[in-house]
Length: 265
Image (cartoon, rainbow, N blue to C red; front, side, top):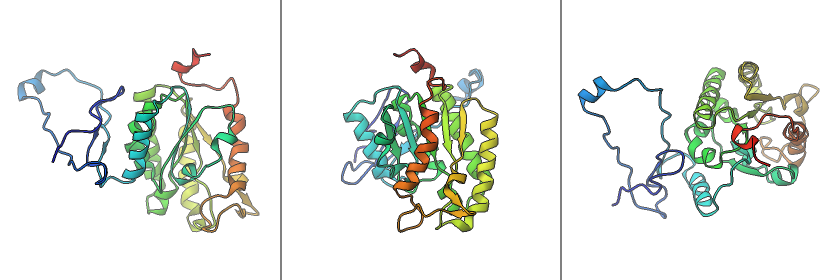
């Protein structure tokens, strides 16, 4: 079986994509030894830490969804300077995104029940090809549900920002706070702790804005009736509340955007 990567190169980095889906290819990913000779290691000049290149195999988390994004970007060449939404299913199920932000060129790259680490690992698949002027991020809720500590969510958000810095410079990120829900109300304390850490991070960075959706989603100290039957994902009213918070931010002509987009008409 062939081990040739399907996507050997892209404009941003070498990307190894192998064994995506059994119905798409029958290849297997093969690790290649790229270790230089000992003499070269001694003589090599120090370099900045490299960002790991993403790898997608048929066993990768959410392989089918991510592969669909790759195919879409291959067929429909991404246009730069969009407003890119990414993260877990609260972004994935935002079906009214284009209607809610009619003045923006929006791209939805939400996928599955993803955790923050998945968004980090797939950054070069989800975000980099679009060279967005700004990023709206929602992830972390599933991490806490899986048993991760607030500090681990915070660490992954920090990693996301570090990769963003490497790939996209000062492109601004709008982090939507981990939302309260009826189904996961017992996790509210951990969610609040994670939100507090990320809010503190945003206070120290000009390129990160914390969007606090929590107060508007609560009534008398408990989640409002703004969820579909699973009591986890939002209904149209929930997305309306999010839109009311985000629209003024993303419609502000004075807001920061990517430097590469600031010179565009």
